[in-house]
Image (cartoon, rainbow, N blue to C red; front, side, top):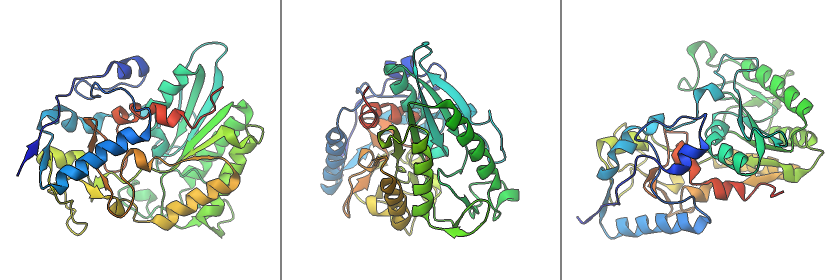
Length: 353
């Protein structure tokens, strides 16, 4: 088989050093020399090129990126900026970033770990636009007006499994109270799309994903003078794993893409091919669609990051490396280095004033 080698990877891109004074990136983790993307076609063209190479029966080697692949699990915002499953009170999960100027506008970001994964990019945007950024994130705490029972042992301590996640509801209530009093200029929110049953809090009556999302977005909108353009819902990113393993851990065993994606029936750790078709990434499309519909019903700005990671459609793929940067730090969260390449695309959805 033919093999294609990418160019070598510098240890860090200057942008990461400038933007992340309070969010450390370990040595050896970082960007290629490529500047942040300015339009989505730059990403789509790269992924299409990968697809074409694989379709020609050629492999793509990433052996020169060994350091970044090995250290991908450390390529994330500070854990100080996310509350644990058991935390119920602030300041747990709260971080203050962005501009320190006296005239900076206040922007808040709120959600679960899938909001936390964007903190690096949000910090860059906040500094560029003179925004004081206050982030609130808690593990597995959905950005919906609901309580749910976590039914996956991989997500929570054993003593919380299969019980109502009241720790989320209590912490979220404290956060919303603080946001309502702070009168922010802009609110950014995001959460993982999940298939667990949802209930109203505290009555525990069953509710739908869509209605829970609409309710939360309507509440957030009320904190910015009912200006829907000043609430940004970032939909969830595509799943980043090969089964329970990250694509980076897969590449650490076999640092190449081969012409066939990993069959969904063969997703054990260390699986051979290290990437998935698009169709494997959204195992709960009805849940994702319900979250989108619920947010859109409230009128807020909805950002779909899917094309920043995958070619969308039945023949699409989601490669583990784009522009020589590992896209995911684990099987569910994007790498901070890749998020920094997306600052222009993310920022384009925000008010420009």
